[in-house]
Amino acid sequence: MDDRITMRLARYRPEEEDEPTFEEYEVPCHKEWVVLDGLNYIKDQLDGTLSYRWSCRMGICGSCGMTVNGEPKLTCATFLTDYAPGPVHVEPMQNFPVVRDLIVEMTDFMEKLTAIKPWIVRDEERPLAEGEYRQTPDELNEYKQYSMCINCMLCYAACPVYGLDPDFIGPAAIATAQRYNLDSRDEGSDERLDLLSLHEGIWACTFVGECTKVCPKKVDPAGAIQRYKLDAALTSLKDLLLPWGAR
Amino acid sequence: MSERPTYTPFHPGWYRPRISTWWWLRRRSSLVFILREVSSIFVAWFVVFFLLLVAAVGRGEAAYQEFMGWAATPGIVLVNLVSLLFVVFHAVTWFNLAPQAMVVHMRGKRVPGKLIAASNYGLWVVTSLLVAWIVLAGWT
Image 1 (cartoon, rainbow over the protein chains, first blue to last red):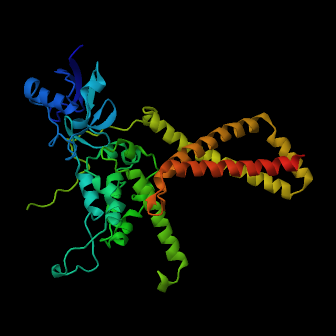
Image 2 (image 1 turned 135 degrees about the vertical axis):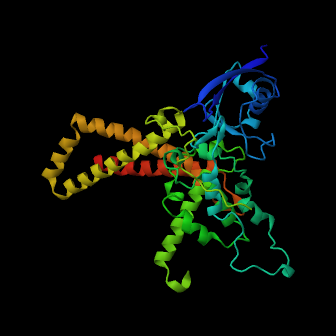
Image 3 (image 1 turned 180 degrees about the vertical axis):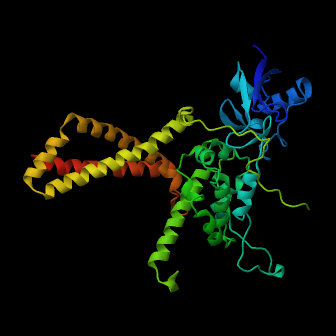
């Protein structure tokens, strides 16, 4: 069996060229090697000028998201042998500006993430002496799935709505907002709704469902957004129908 | 700490690929998504067609017969056939997505997605049978 595979990488050197080009490298195709191992081999042995992000190699840090053969993937969790006999096309994540080679600019996502207040919001903080906010396992299960997000941004790369309208707050940020809204200790859902009920919030989503398909942590952002829509609709209906006192 | 970095949408060094007009033809899932969006036009057409029918019935026998004659012309039959295909496509893709949007808890446990989809399909069949029964009973 052929134990080498060709990797075709997108290269972009802004000081030299106006748009990306492709370069091919031949790397060993070991059974246990992932795409990231191939990239590290190229960087170490073949071409030290290659730039890409990575850190943990185990699907925790969310740094190594790229486009592999057209699909948004964590390169640390995508095996080279699955693409044999090759070539394996590796490009930067779609829908983001490319800074260099396989590195995208992610400030837009970071700003959106902080905008939804991804922390526990309390109307009034309890004094430390009263101890921690306690929670039952059932209350934990309500939001646990959404708390698994590693901010890898694969869902943004997969989302055609974000590609066409970069103002869209996007799947991971909305799923993270849901993670805090569903947390029994949190009291910030009204504040988050002010932002997310705007056009660029939940209503921009047309339920393509791709974000959920590519999510490496099974967070299901599409589900989170649709649940949010239902909650938002019920809230505005209540505001419309109920008298002031009963809200 | 230094100032927070701000997003610069027009950074000269960044490469921004232009999204092709035909981006939705590249992946099957994008094509299915766009077809589902387009299907809403045909859903709207069915509503208009139905309202025209109701209006014709309201205007009496002659208007009703005239409407039925118009509805039987090949052009309208073709439009309605295409619309039917799109409306069925719309319904099926929507029912398949329903479990994701509906989180139902029963006796403290989350109802499995397949059951939610199945109940949607079940309601669809029951409603269709009911309509068919009313129409066919009126026929004989």
